[in-house]
Length: 452
Ligand code: SF4
Image (tube, rainbow, N blue to C red; front, top):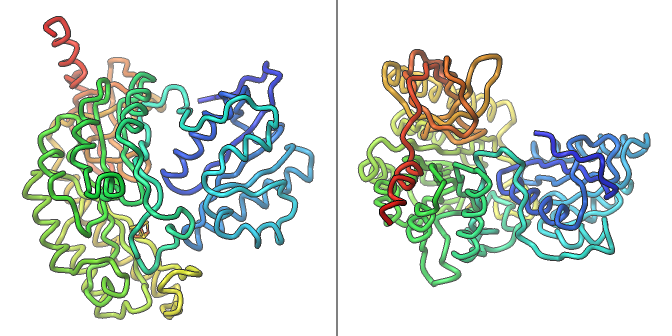
């Protein structure tokens, strides 16, 4: 969706966002602030007065991508294709002095939420310093909703608290206002994110209150799907389960990154729970929220993951039958607790372990998808490509999970909810045929309006 308005005399700024959903929200917040100050956002770097690269510094792969993106932009700057070049985000927060020394062509480096300083640098005469005026690209039907920043957990491998600091929950009012604003802009799906969403409220109320937050979000008119991501499993707030089960607009879906299951590895990772606790938790979630789609993330090649520990993990993947699963190679990160354990497992072994886990998961996913053939599913239309509609079900988060490709003689629009017959399956995606538009929770609100 183009966001360029070349007729304007204001400065033209292009923003590149790398990394995770939390960074997407940060970029959108920065965009909101820039637009409020009459700065024009442009789709292309070429010709922009300034380019801002919002980097990721999570693991080696992400750092490499961030550095390469900066270097490409430096070349553009040298060639006169762009004006100023700024770098923000996690990589810049973590390695600012190294970057300033090694890539001096960048005009300025900023930390993770240095929005006001970025604005001051781009436009010293700016009028508004307000934060939180987030800009979501026009036409967006799905948006991330960040409920907290930072993390208080002590995971030994993780550099995120070094970059983002300790956990800070956003206030309930703040979150609800943003959710209502997004709904009024046409967003139909909120994807709830934070480094550890289950921790929400602990710093505000002395106890975790995610259940209360989800209940309130479930009342936001116009929102049809609310999806919970990054639910850390230790000290899991069990009272969210009935809320997920009983609130019509909360997806029967949860992303819960477990990282590993072998006790020695979990202990060294300082994850605060054991294999047994994890198994019980997964069992309880499935029991209390029948049909829930569970997504998880794993790390292989952690320093004390021997063959035995890896086999245990692989066996667990086969047993637990997650609906969605991602797996990353361990990355040794400076200043983390695990750093001193070195990185003894060779890259090829990590890759082989990833391949084994993904093969096991592919079989599980293919089997689960096959079982959906012949059923009717409620889907959200995302886009149309050459006569085919790309949709997602309640069981699929945007960007990381599968798609459902459907055919339809009726013209469908992004953000509409439809029912479709599932007619075929691939390992991760499905095919279907449109039957009719689906009833939505918003429809039932509309029907209730005259009565209220
Ligand atoms: S929960 Fe652990 S892995 Fe996740 S951000 Fe916090 S410290 Fe990192």
